[in-house]
Length: 413
Image: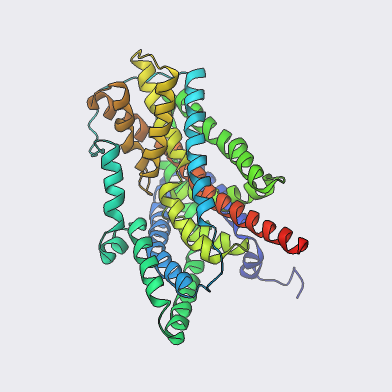
């Protein structure tokens, strides 16, 4: 059949998903500019898409991890440990970048009393306690509330237990995993339409007028995130692979970062990342665990947000920052980021914790959180895009490095 004879639907099916997403993005921008009233009504489309992703993510993670562990062959290696190291290294490096940028280009805030209905944690111990409680959460509660730490704990435990079950049970579990994966692929096919609705409604409703007063702060935040995405992360990947990292970096940014930018939720982007990992040919037993784990603890963007906004408050109040304190802030921001929620705006609730290092009272710290919500249209989108795309990037780097090492050993033998 010639290209001219193809129907519009067939042509659309042959177009790559990324191209379709770009088309949806452009269409959403044009609709918001030309017909803002109509664009506002498209918010329902975006909400349906994000809700669908959030709905399938918990059950997908639970079934996929359980099936991978249950069918794991003895002697077959996974690469979780090096991925965890990359996650922690990347998050700490991002916090250091934010400290340096905030020192070189200090930002000031106009702090005024604003009511923000949030409950930030009281300290690092509370963050760590929350993570521990998440591990021992009721499995039904974990699934309903998208508690991915709890879901992982139960999936790993059930997977280990089912490894001792009969072959038929493990086969059924594998078939169930394939079925859930098929549903996820169907949901992801609607990404262009969902992004169209998200972009059109966001631009038509919020616009960017409220952001003009915070352009320097926004530029600093997004500049740090771009520097990490295009310089720090490639450097870490190069150290791991010893070859040009940018083809892999741009693939992850294009196919994971774009979707995460508009969903603004690392949890909602888990199905997208799992599908991308499969297309990259990564080790399934590894990425089925590392991707949902990364959505919870790999938070370079959150570390940048916490650090930049905290130091903006510090500069506004005229508080001096020495090098040891800056290093301590980097460590605290990295730890706090690991405890940030995988939903939109999760990192903002941890800013008061970082502000407490400098003796800033919670009343002022909550005003900084309010500023974060104002600029969240861009800040949270860029933060999630960096967080989520890095999950795939570091997973791919660790898996590919292990494969190349195995090939070298095989050649020597």
